[in-house]
Length: 189
Image (cartoon, rainbow, N blue to C red; front, side):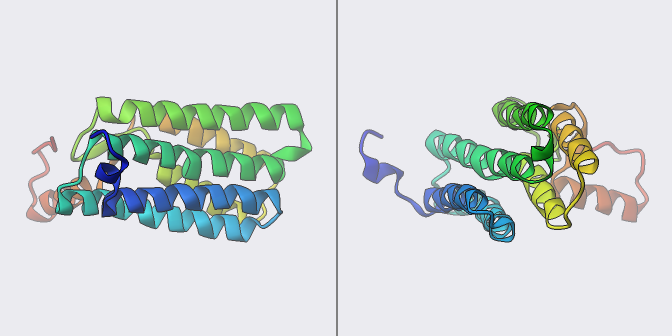
C-alpha cells in the first residue's frame, strides 16, 4: 500500500482515536486535570478493545494497523499513566519518581514489542499494557501517597515484562467451561 487512502479504514480510525485520546490525556495532565486524563484513558481503552474486532470483521487486519495499535497503546497506556503518576504522587521525590516512571515506559514498550512474538489465543504473556494503564489511572483518582504509588508502578512494570500468563477473554471463557464441565486435567492451549 503506497497511498494514504489504503490506510483509511474503520479499524485504523478506532486506533487513531485511541492515540488522539492518549495525546489529549497528556494535555489534560499538563493542565492539572487528572480526572479528565483518566476518562480519556478509558476512552482510549474502549477504542483499543474495538479496533481489532472491527479489523477482523472488515478484513482490514494489517501490519500497518498492528503497528499503529502498538504505538497508540504506548502513548495512551504507557506514557500517559507514567506522566500522571510522575506529576502526581511521585513528583515529591523527582529522581526516584523519574526513574520509576521511565521504567514504566520502558516496560510498556518492551511488553508491546514482545506481544506479536509470543501471541497466544488463550493467554497474554505479561500483564497487558492497556490493563496496566487503566488500573494506574484509576488508582490515581483515589489520591494514593508516594509509597503506594511507587509500589504500584514498580509492580505493574515487573508484571508487564514478566512471563506470567494472564488469560484473554477467550481463554478465560474456555477455562470456565472446562471447570463447569468438571474437566480439570485438560490444559488450555
